[in-house]
Length: 274
Image (cartoon, rainbow, N blue to C red; front, side, top):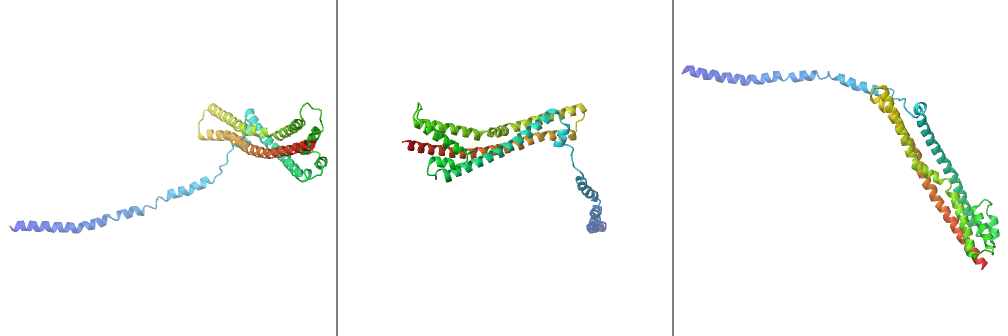
C-alpha cells in the first residue's frame, strides 16, 4: 500500500517537473530564430547586385542602325524608295506654299473688287481700277466684250453667261492645279514606305540565313531599321492629307467669290443692255 502511494507520488512529482521544465526548453529553443535573423544581413549581396544593375543600364545604349546606316548600307531599291519619299515630301511643301501664296493673292483681289470695282461710276472705270493681273479683271473684260457683240447666234444673255462660265472654268482649273498631287501623295506614300519595309525585312532575313546565326540582336536591329521606312511614309502622308484639305477649303471660298462676281456682272450687263 505504501509502495502504491510512493509510486503515485513519484508520478505526480515527475509530471509537475516536466510541466515546469517545458517552458524552459521552449525558451531555450526560441533564440534559434533570432540566430537565423542575425544571419539575415547576408542577403546584402543581391542589394549590391541591384545597385550594380543601374550602373549597367547607364552604359552606352547607342545602336548602329538608323537612317544614315540604311542609306549607307541599303541596296539600290531601298535608296530609290527613300529618294521617292523625299521627293514626295519636298513636292508637297513646295506646292502648298505656292498655292497658298496664290490663294492669298486672289483673296486680296476679291477685297479690291468690293472696294474699287463696284464703287466706280462706270463699269470701264471699275475695270481700270483693278490690277492687270487680276482674275476678276479678266472676267470683267470678257463680260464687257461679250456684251458688245450682237452678231451671235444665241441671245445676248446666253452669250454673256457662256463667256463668263468659260472664264470661271479657266480660273478654277488654275486653282486646282497641283492640289491633286497632295492627294496622291497622301494616298500613295504610306504604301511606298511599306514597300521599303518589306524589302528591308527581306534583306535582313536573307542576311541572317546566310550567316546561319539566329539571335535577337541580329533580328531586332535590321527589322527595326526596315520599319523606319513605314514611319517615313506616314510622316510624308499625314502633312500631305492635312494640307490638301486646307487648300481645297480655301479654293471653295475663292470659287464662290468668283461665281458671285460673275453672276452680279452678268446681271448688271443684261440690265444695262436693256
